[in-house]
Image (cartoon, rainbow, N blue to C red):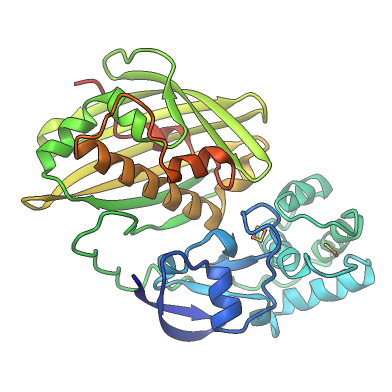
Amino acid sequence: MITRDITITVNGRTHRASVEPRTSLADFLRESLLLTGTHLGCEQGVCGACTVNLDGAPARSCIVSVAACDGADVRTIEGFEDDAVMANLRRAFSASHALQCGYCTPGMLITSRDIVTRLPDADEHRIRVELSGNLCRCTGYMGIVEAIGGVLESRPVAVPMEAPTRAAAAPPPMPPKPTVPAARKTAVDTDPKMTRLTQSFSVGFPRDAVWALFGDFPRVVVCMPGASLTADPDGGHVIGKVAVKLGPIRAEFAGEGDINIDAAAYSGTVRGMGLDKGHNSRAKGDVIYRLTEEDGNTTRVDVDVAFALSGTLAQFSRGGIVNAVADRMTQMFVANLEAALGGADATAPRAGPQTAELEGGRFVLSVLWAWLMSPFRRP
Ligand code: FES
Ligand code: FES
């Protein structure tokens, strides 16, 4: 059994644990730390029942791998016991009858606290938009919206969000032989309009071989989960689409990207944008990728992304959900990339379980067109 040693801070207490890569943060919190205030509903990143604060922002703990939380600072509903804003929200929820069975309530409260502290001028429409990732089967939302609005009107004294510890922690060393997921990443909403993240992974092939494959655009597109070209590449300009799904949400982003290559530095930059007409949502972003030789037979790939989602899918660009999606897509991409480098047929889409899972609907969300299209160009 493969495990990874992590150090994670939960509600102010530091824990060290050996975890399996497939264990979610929610399962770790509930089963290892017995913090059962974090509820599980859909377990697909859709309902928001499992919402916790991860490095200061709400995240769906059911789709966050705890192995990726090394150095993270997590606060569950139990960790807000002495929090003044949360106390106001609890009182307001009670007064406004904002809960019935209470199953959604821990996640709803954590999201509500994020709204109150981050958006002091939010009106009812904005509150509803921000709450759209948290589902309640009982209340009809009116009481919840009223409760949040009431707390906002009372102008509570701003309480600083817990300081993220991940940035201060030493980054974990990259495993020697890699391959899949091994992602070092940060996802920080430093700009309210842009989300930034870094994904790094290693493949067990020499850098020149990886670089050659990256230059063969159609071959690499085959490796990208849900991606396909809709026209032949024209130099550094590519046109294609990305079909994705997250629970009941299906999106198809049609987009274009322009790629500039610095062959001497084994790096490239991409500027891309895409439109999902079904949800009237747009994605745009910039990507920088670099290939670094780790030893003669292993290459590390670093991808830095800054992107913005607008429209009805914008809620998914915040917090841990984008980390989780990027992790999953990276795992799929790396597996397919290594298969292609190993000589597998690169002319047909890989129908392995990872791709099937993505397309079969358990878990997919468009993070952004640009990230998916990043490493490509015609030589
Ligand atoms: Fe995590 Fe539904 S249980 S989003
Ligand atoms: Fe029952 Fe929200 S109060 S699901």
